[in-house]
Amino acid sequence: MDCPCPTKLFLFLLSWIATLFSIKNHGPVNMVTTTNVGLNYGLLGDNLPSPSEVINLYKSIGITKIRIFDPNTEVLNALRGHHEIELTVGVKDQDLAALAASEEAVNGWFATNIEPYLADVNITSITVGNEVIPGPIGPQVLPVMQSLTNLVKSKSLPISVSTVVAMSNLGQSYPPSAGMFTPQAREQLVPVLKFLSQARTPILVNIYPYFAYASDPVSISIDYATFNARNAVVEDGAMQYTNMFDAIFDAFVWAMEKEGVKDVSMVVSETGWPSAGNGNFTTPEIAAMYNGNFVKHVRSGKGTPKRPNCSIDGFIFATFNENEKPAGTEQHFGLYEPIDMRPVYKLF
Image (cartoon, rainbow, N blue to C red; front, top):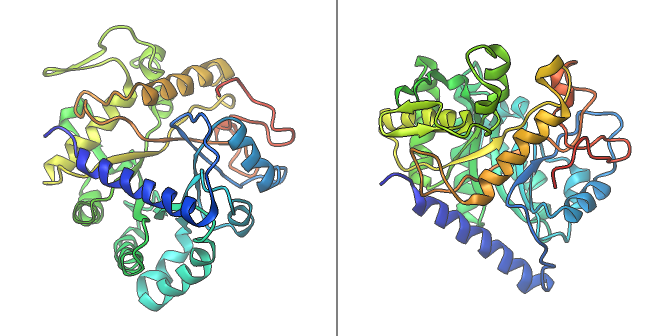
């Protein structure tokens, strides 16, 4: 079995259960032509449009999946009634310690941040921590995931619970079949992966070929980094790679398999390319090329060489350029300028 497709089918059915529940209780959902790609909705800016304006933007470009990094009340209220938009909500990293120490605290967090919106916001996923594994608060992730999963199950809610991890968990990634976790990742991440396997829930991963390319543009070609290579650049046994995204994705799959985890699917919680901040490496043209080709990859329904029968499911980072993020490329991953919501470049 090259891919945990039963997991994807299970999650697909959960999504439709949530949608049908909304239709039954709130009338028909207005169906639009969708992109099959989600967007991250970050809020680290002092000039961002109102959440209601942002929701209207998403609807106008056919976005039906968004991810927010914490349960922001204004965003959640703006989403009321928009059942066609599936929402992934993050638990703040700074909340993990208190939640890991007390199941009662988890119940309180859920009662405050999730339960009041269940009737008219289509919350499909909760992520516990953002790139905190591996790290000092990494061990707090699993107990919170376990408590939230038990809570969601006890209420028979079609909400998955997972965490978001970066590729820093990989100690080795080239060639992809050599993919292996670091010792700290094995200690902190593998128990999480085994729990996700039991829960039939995907792991969320952030994949950024940009950073690899920017750190070594001599060895890595821009075409390979942006899905533009016509021929195989990396040959790994019988597997041929024409783009770096697939190679990174599969390195993580191989690393999971080396730990005995073969049935956990992966959702790409973040990928993208900055349009400014690092000279000729970061132009609107290159960013448009990368993100446009990522969208094509998702729409094609094709998987990776390691998991060819499982289509890619993912979110682009990010909706807006955010001026309160660290100076440099971090402020320029957005598809839109915040002041007037003008596209930085044409994508949707």
